[in-house]
Length: 251
Image (cartoon, rainbow, N blue to C red; front, top):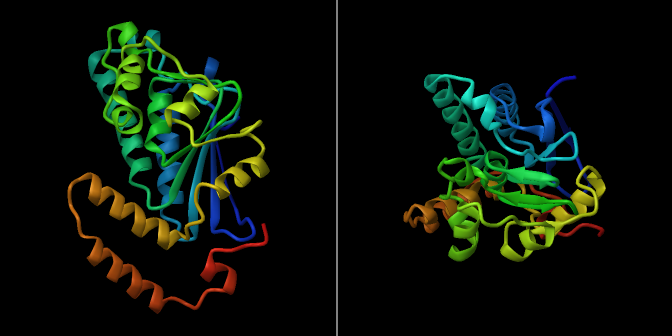
């Protein structure tokens, strides 16, 4: 079976949605170098599609990902382990820098670099069996904290980073890790309904707004320039339908 399934749908009333689902072939969908490379290639391709307004990343099975397997890493040399770290951080940066709205469908185990991949997304939609956290510090490793401390209160971030806490579905929602909850993250109708309460942005609207957000995070405030540029692009584009212009659909 292929470690990756990529499909694009065109739901009524919104821009195209790219569905990217992965299966590492390991228990609990542990991350491997091969699946990280596959994800990076697939996400690079869908990110380049100007019709895609939303990218949804999920697992084929029950667990989003329990992260990297410590025993597999211990079985490599330092140079190979460093290449693995570089590859995963490049994947996180690719997701975070995507011009489309990105969504992680998290359920089951979502640990370590699985949790970090989910935080690289704009939103997380959780299933009912979520177990979300960072086991790295328990193994003598550094817990990645740069995205975590931007997402949750400092006290919660510390408990998670030091491996003293896990978040279940309601805990993730209460902490601000999950913005929506569904009964089944494999049910695309449920996901699309939840997504409707999170984003209705067009591809251009998402691209310009995410650039403004990145600028603000970097302390670079140029909203006027971006506003004028987005206005110029909108004025040069074909006139939208009434529903597209108002952001309304039949729901």
